[in-house]
Image 1 (cartoon, rainbow, N blue to C red):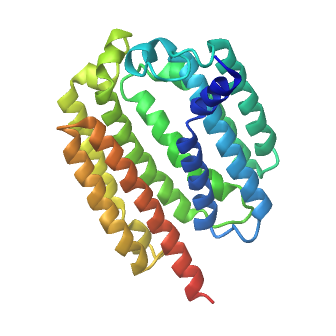
Image 2 (image 1 turned 90 degrees about the vertical axis):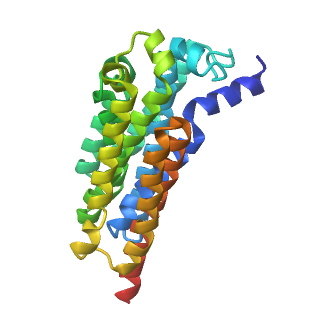
Length: 285
């Protein structure tokens, strides 16, 4: 492999789209908490730490998953030979070090969240991924916690809306992770993993995922009902709910399409929080 091919392989290990998405979620958490303009340096450090930590977590996940990926994802960087397993491990450790360096500049609650998340990222593949439901729940927590991390990075910020966003995002992510496990059943069974679809059956796992998503949709008006946001929030979260419910329905026929559509619904729901907060800021002027 050439240097350019190896460089592209390293970039692929981080899952750039996921890195950008997680960084955006951290920023949204800070914005929803109302602290972006008050502490821009802290927000930048939190966003940077999130980007590096997610990239590191994805890289180390590919390191541990390299044998499974030879079956499920043979085009990934390690299976196709663009990056060696040892190189992927060293790269992930370098990214983790950068994430820690940025996180320790933040307030203690943010440092605590970062510490828990870094340990969880490392432990996920080797300890939790093969345990029915627990690996999914850990990933759901990690995604939702990016909102909390962004809010906690700002001293004295109002974290109530970010807590609600954390809970809703975690439930929606848990749904998507279960659907993704249904999508990956063949390779996971080959490797002897005992994921939820393997443990209870694919249709039952999809039914669990659909039920969880309904719970999240029913709970989505909470920020409006508690007075955190106004009608503008509802106008955007309603179509987001519709997209996610459609995704749950489609997953019974095609899990790949379902989990992809669910991701778009989740981003639209996050947009509802942004608009809700922006409208609140505008009304206070």
